Length: 65
Image (cartoon, rainbow, N blue to C red; front, side):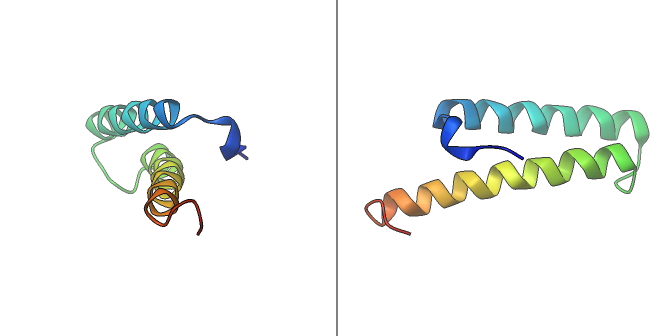
């Protein structure tokens, strides 16, 4: 489990980029979206994207969500 408060926005952005790259590479190798490695990376990527969206919403609402 990730402790989100310990992850900076810059780190979060870099993690998302890295996971997107990994997802593309694993998909190229496995050739199917239902591969277990593709699904694992996709789920992890989803978690980081959701946290990024939460932070953006919080910032838009003046720090309150």
